[in-house]
Length: 588
Image (cartoon, rainbow, N blue to C red):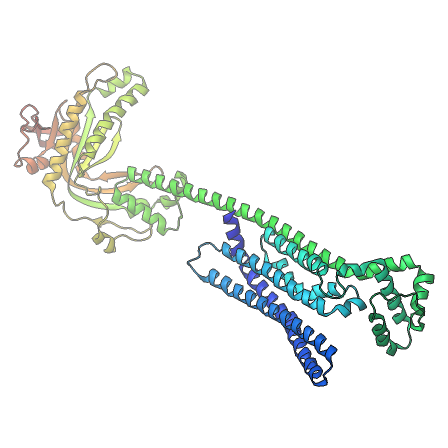
């Protein structure tokens, strides 16, 4: 409810301000100016009475002047309250200290309640002063209500909550139509008594007489004579009343004449009641439409927030998936290219594949040269025979258990990166330097183009620690052999793997637009694969290039295997890690 009231205050801001302006203008142009004019005329008459020395005139006019001063003061107070409330609402709307604008509605409701109270008081003094007008026209006090309560029409378009509109209009009805007419302090007393049959009949005769009198200069004299005595008996025969009595008693009928005259006298009251009821009903329907709009807006906001949260979560999941598939440097570049192409989010994986990686440009955009990188391959001995003997899901479960352990070993060293698995083969690269975020130097160098369609080939600096990279690869291979030896294959045979390592230059990149993969290319990859395939079960074989990097480091013992025939390479000098003489076996 508090949120709804705040929403009403915000959405109704221009109408509330406009309503204040309209009410102030009506108040200023109507009651205030008329009271000022009446006060000036009363002051002039008072001076005349003082100069003439007439005692009766002095008492009556002084009393009238005093009542006029009270009415003028009440009108001015009402004007000040309205203006102050307008300034307060302006301040609340513009101030950042008031996060909730609900106080504007409370101020506005209180202002119009105060308006009803002050203007009812001013109206009561006007009725008291104008008692002679009530005798001439009993419904004159109803017309005065239109004059004093007219600023309340602003409530129609101000858009206040229904409870506020109903409260103000109910108090206005109670004050102007009930309390003031009933407690009228003038000679007339209760103003509603003037609508009794006798008073209405007297008014009817007078009205019909005036209407049929051809000589209108006698009207004022007639009124003066009638108003000298409130209990004037119309049975007295007067020439100027003969047409009225004839119409009411003979032509129309006294009862019918009273009914017609009473309706004519009460018609302004009926119109006023209809106007009050219309304001209340309109306020109710406006309130209903606003509440429905507020509920719809809350639903739309909740759905939008839920949608945005789902999209953000989906984007985070897909970015995490990309980071799990590609190295951070490559993944960041792919995500950056996606943003620069104008994709607000990844959407689905098909969108990611066709949008982010479409147009067959991704391989061109992400290609890096790496120097002195150590590549390691592992392969399970007897995997083909085991696959023939076991069910496929058993093979998959076994590979999953083995490769999970290899993944844990990769996570222990930041220089290692799992490149891919092909069947039972596990490929690891050491020294790629892709496990770290792109440096500010690379980001500001301008080597990375903003469009995916650009052909970019980024050459990295030489590996600053090729020996450390080779050392990490050999340690991983040694640990992988030990971990695998603890497992049993689904066919009951102990697990043995071969491992091979070679060091050299490679090029990395993302290949394909459907199910893209981060791959390494170059002769180094082929040679490392040959080191594994030509190796010995349960042993790790390294090339001469790798051996030259780690031979002087200590911690490993290698035995020279000699020259081995390598497919596609000819004879190559290779070395086998001596596990039994490994100086670090106990520590590992």
